[in-house]
Each structure stands twice: as C-alpha cells, then as structure tokens.
Length: 241
Image 1: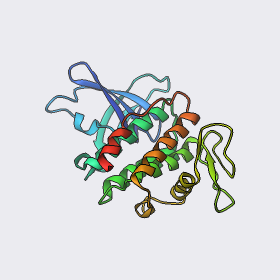
Image 2 (image 1 turned 60 degrees about the vertical axis):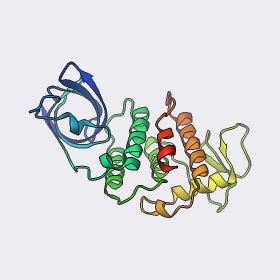
Image 3 (image 1 turned 90 degrees about the horizontal axis):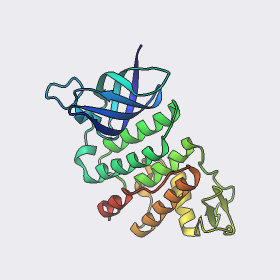
Image 4 (image 1 turned 30 degrees about the vertical axis):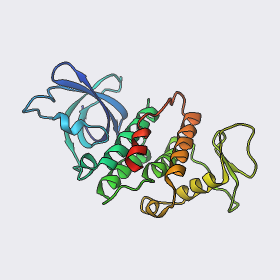
C-alpha cells in the first residue's frame, strides 16, 4: 500500500552502480531504510541530489509492517533549501546535526513531536539570514526534551552546578566528574530559556562555547546507550572560530 509522509534524510549509501539505500526519519513511520533505484541516471525519477543529509522531503512510499528495507514511489524536496548547501557555516551545522541524529535515532518509531521539532529547526536554519554560533547548542539542549532527558529548570534563580549524570541542578558539586561550573551552568540555563530567535543575543565566548558543547555531548553520551563520539564538531570550531 502507498502512503504519503514527510521525511528527513539522515544517510545515503551506494547500492550497486545507480541505486542507493537511504536512511530517512519519516513523520509516519519513524526511522526507515529505503532502496531507491536509478538515482544516478541522468533522467532519474528521483535524483541523488535531493537525498543529501538533512534534506526535507515529501514522500510517497510503500510500507510493510514486517520491517526491512522499504521502497519509495515518489520523492521531492520540500521546501527547497535556499542557503544550507551554499553557506559554509550552515552546511557545517547540518553535517553536525545529522551526525548527532544518526546517533540518537537508532531504532526510532514514529514520533510526531520529535519529527516536527527537527523539521522546524532545519527549516529555520535554512531561512535565517545568518547562522548563529549558538544554534547547535540550543538545538541539542532542546532536542533532549524529545529524547526524554531534558532537565527541569531550577526553582532557585542561581544554582551553582548542573549534574550531567543525574540531569539536575544543584548547589554543591556531585561525587563524580560530570558536572558544570557555575558559569557553565548559567549558560546552560540561558539556552534553556531561549528560542531560535533569542540565541543571537546570547553572549557566549568561543572558548566557553567549545567547553559547553563538549559538556552537552557528554550529557548525551551519559543518557543515550552507545552514543559514541561525535567527530564533526571539530569542523564547527574551525568555521565559527
């Protein structure tokens, strides 16, 4: 049976001379793998160019509840990207976000709020005139809400530390190494209180941003099994440095 759904491309792997297997996070069916034939031919019905990481698609797919590799009947990029493929900063952010999502969405079932958040965030990144150097920090902290380990904001106005392991704000350092200093904790709280529009006004130095990103990735590694290491954040340091 044919189904219409939106999708977010995460990974494309060559399959034979002209075909690919594409991993797509779909609105209706969650994370799926699709074989798409003939995408490298000049007159391909679905061209390889629209299957780049983080591209947003309108799809018509065949779906079998038994799982396995599915098939795509139709695909078109919607909305068409206006800036991500042509802007070094935005392209670097897209590569980083894609790598994180590949680590997070390993066997993800359909999750409409999660899909909507990622879809909106990518659309926002493409439409904004300039990429904020804080975009990835805000994206990750907000993403943790949909992954199930978003922290609860403190009742008190000025907690001293944030415990990455337990995901709580505290006034004394915990008995392990995974916690934030007072300054880092304030940056974290400010990001939690922000929006995509507000992050442009957050004053976080380059050094603090690097440290905070490493802490956020530690936070993910502590709360997502087999999260592993993220390599593409070094590209961000170069581009935004």
